[in-house]
Figure (cartoon, rainbow, N blue to C red):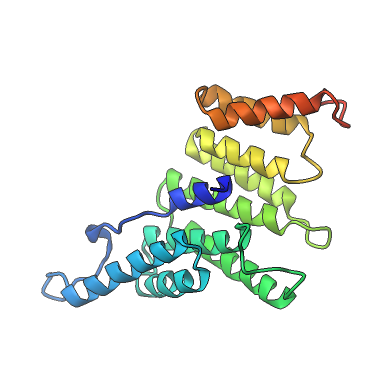
Length: 225
């Protein structure tokens, strides 16, 4: 499984706590029919997301977000779904094939991330929101649409808010690696070394760092050698 997809799927909560649903009748008892509908929408949405059924995931998770606009978990899952639908290698969006649909996909993903930011109520949630914003900005970066500076700030904020979580450092490193201007930069090596310091037994980080250290010996950037 692609590393970016695995990371984003890990962020999608696989259950929706009953205490967070907010669907109660005036008498204070749970509205069973509505509760069933919310759980059904959530389960369908996550299932479609895991199967890369983007349209179906959007329908279920988008509807759930309309019903529970203040729910952090719901906002997160919709943001994950929309960002993943853009950045996944099997994304239905292609700027060269349909520029208008691509632009609309970016807009909707950005809107979902902004909404998630608005309702995030802990530093952990805010860190995930910044991670998603960074992934989307790095993906959208282009000569006619420079976004990499924004992306790097998003990743740095995610690292700070998460308390130096190694997965955030690795996500930052992957974004640097996938950008031509930073692919052989000392920032990439620094990020991988920090990720390894925080997670010394992570084989993916070890392998990536060894690969980049070997490539650095012949890098065009003299600061990397």
